[in-house]
Length: 203
Image (cartoon, rainbow, N blue to C red):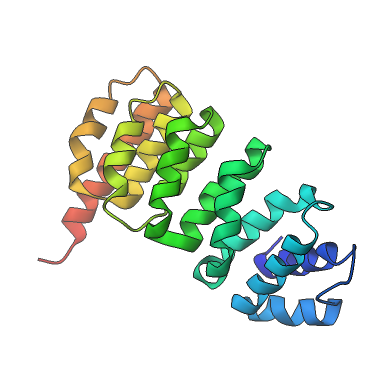
């Protein structure tokens, strides 16, 4: 389901209890625009009825992430989801959404959760860090290459390839000796991406 259709679905569902803040016609219009207006409508509906619609938390986090900087007013909600929600799936989705919405401002929250989160949350946080356009994410991702969980190392290697900074080359080369075949494959791909980026960049 595309982002626009999912916004319509979310707004209609969130309006099922209490007073609907957005009817179907308005939901369609907001979905077509796909801007901060849509994010605000989703946020207002969800915040007002959160207790009754906890099952929508993952969907809401994902939608807000897709709206990116247009959903900047949702940063406090996403931070609460990340740090407080009892559902690991919600916290994982919130990590990625927060990176997409807040950008570099998400680094502090993501790093804190990386230190204390379970394996699934650490994995999603490694994915999220690859979406943050900030050099400060690189040493955090390099540290993730030593995580006890292979999935975290796998995602960290992939994210380092996406960031594309040469400071990651040596740690990625060390990751070529990782016990996990998937980690080794991602490390190799990341190295190729970084080197290729240098080769393709203008003089």
